[in-house]
Length: 143
Image 1 (cartoon, rainbow, N blue to C red):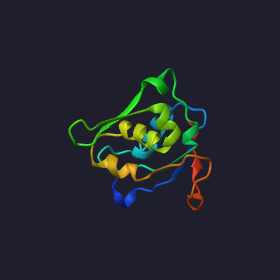
Image 2: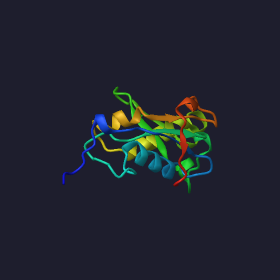
Image 3: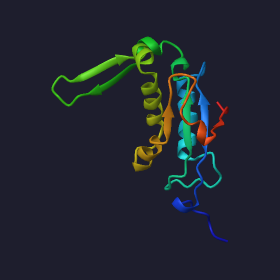
Image 4: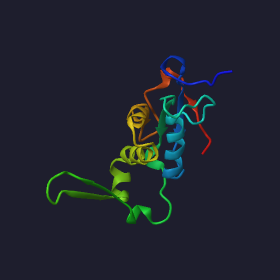
């Protein structure tokens, strides 16, 4: 008996929709990361990209628990001297809730080349509607 190893030829990818309305941002991002990585499948292989496509809707209605809206910052550096940029999550969730969700999912994926390929399969939308009805996505409610 041989061990099954997933590769490009034997992976079938499905589409899933996660509704983030009223759910914590971190729990929604964790569920999306599991689906993107393929850890919910019995044929999961850690060194192969066997994940599915994930559509996250209602990203603007995701909630942050505690005082994170006022105390948590998104920070990045431009590369220039004194180029540290800071944005409070309250402003980030108002202006770019899609970016906040993508950053949360990116932080929950492994730091290797598989994560960059997995992030291309993540589609985040601010509201209820999305452009992927032709793919017949299934709702994912295990949050």
